Amino acid sequence: MTRSPPRARAVPRAAACALCAILSSWLATGTAAADDQPPPRFELTPYLGYRIGGEFERQDGNGKFELDEGNSEGLIFDIEARDVNTQWEVLYGHQSTHVATQFTFDPAERLGLDVEYFQFGGTYLFDGEDTRPFIALTVGVTHFGPRPPGIDSESYFSGSLGGGVQLRKAKRVGFRLEARVYATFVNSDGALFCHSGPAGGVCAIQIQGTALYQWEGSAGVVFRF
Image (cartoon, rainbow, N blue to C red; front, side, top):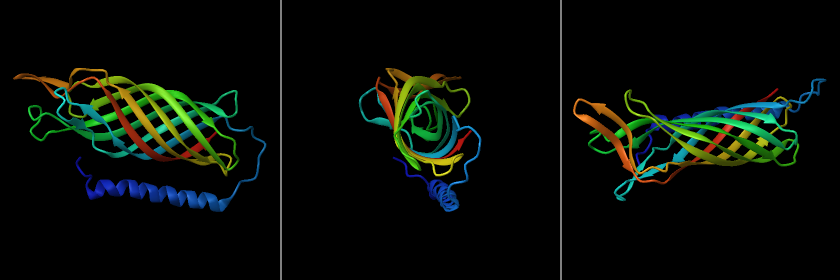
């Protein structure tokens, strides 16, 4: 697997330092005085993360086409359900990465790829006050979008399972720390990421039907309203 350059590795460290600074400031301020407004029902969480994994099985069985690990970002929207311990959840996650290709597709053997998750499901929060552990389960679609124009994109059914903790010392602002695994059900036996040229059609990879798994660790700021 190709190692990320020093600049790329510095980005998640800088993001983590920024989140830690915000968290320290938030903890120092303490709980704000209660007001007469009704309790919040909605949560919006922009997050930064780091995603690893993702392999397509080669059609000939001789190895794999691997996605590069790297930074990720996304947005989570939650709506409190009738049961105060559960929420409906909508999730969007994005990663800009690269995948190894067949030499006949590109002599450099690298294809820029955007991996996007569009998911819907729910979250269950365990009892607690300032700290509330949770689990989340979602289903939806994974979209693989090659960055060069003219190359076919691909979309597949997918699901995710996550868990973590919400820090809720303040009423309107909190933090969400989470680990999540995504499973994409490729269910394909053939070519992916193809385009046509003067010499005819050519495809980046040839795969056999399988599932693709990615793991992500993330931290986000929760805004409640």
